[in-house]
Length: 69
Image (cartoon, rainbow, N blue to C red; front, side):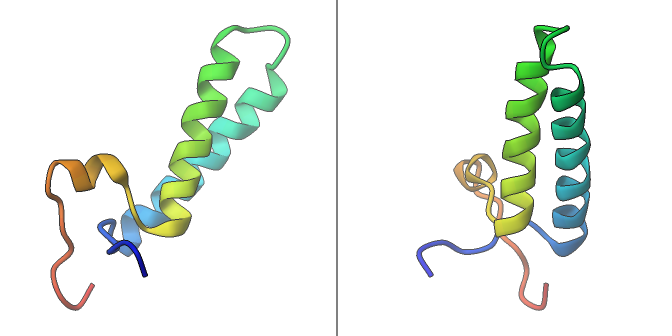
């Protein structure tokens, strides 16, 4: 692997759920709200970091998982 996971499993599940909710909201309000684009982008980023278990912003500040997680 080219990266080390830096997001614990409980947070990964939470990120995927919140990301899917944001993506669903973005799809439902795509034409009616300018915030839908932002919600879609945030939702996609949260879902991807949850699926991969790696967050670039967390890596930039030095967040690491303890052994055993």
